[in-house]
Length: 209
Image: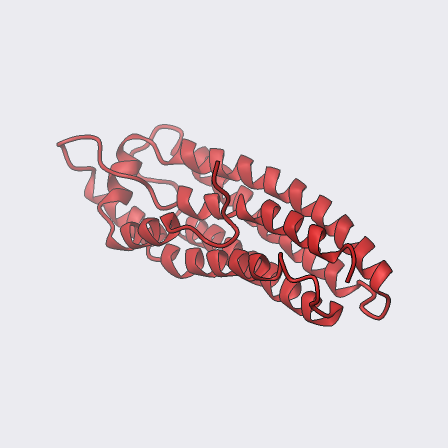
């Protein structure tokens, strides 16, 4: 399967950056001695309770792509199946996270919180849509012709890189939301702590350097 292996690696590298977004939504730690508003803590719980399962789903999708990155003998149909499932899981994961933010609404007592929450939710929803489109593209690839399939994957790799850049924007939107008391409130949530710990563990798609 000449040409598939390098393309798989490009896809894995592009996808690995997407895992950062799941880490961003988990919060990091409390910066102050004074506890946040109880209403804000309740808000944070609504968001955080959705994080562990979706973070795991996103991480698993990245890992599945990485698992075939070095397999140059994988039949096109098997590779297609892996990509389709991974992109669907990524789409579902980000859609659920966006839904959690939508359900929570604006963080109580935070200046400009409504806009910050809306921006973060819209970025996550946009990522979900982009991964759905990638899934459709992969579903349409010709698995009977190795050359056409490899060429199609190369196009998908380029599109995945663009989605990765979109993910960077999403990470920044989440970081803007997770400041001050919002960060403290999220840090108190066991579900966010669990997700942060799990997301921090390296996957096969992660690179060092």
